[in-house]
Image (cartoon, one colour):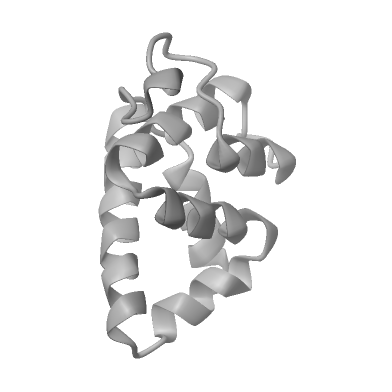
Length: 111
């Protein structure tokens, strides 16, 4: 399960899209925010500035700022994602549905 969560988080960091946040639109590289910083700080071999910036742009488009903060936490503590996934609350179930849609978009746009 832990590998699934880590893989999902890395896949989520592979998207390229325009952003909802005006400051992050433009070039296909260089979108900055808490998701891209967490992606780079996770120090995974596939995590490049271009890839992490791309994922940030998808996150900006598809997730609220609160959801982006929750997503960023997955990189430092993958068990957080697992706890949310197995949680049986409406709030966490709704977040998980948004997160899964986000990871699909991220994979499709930059994978």
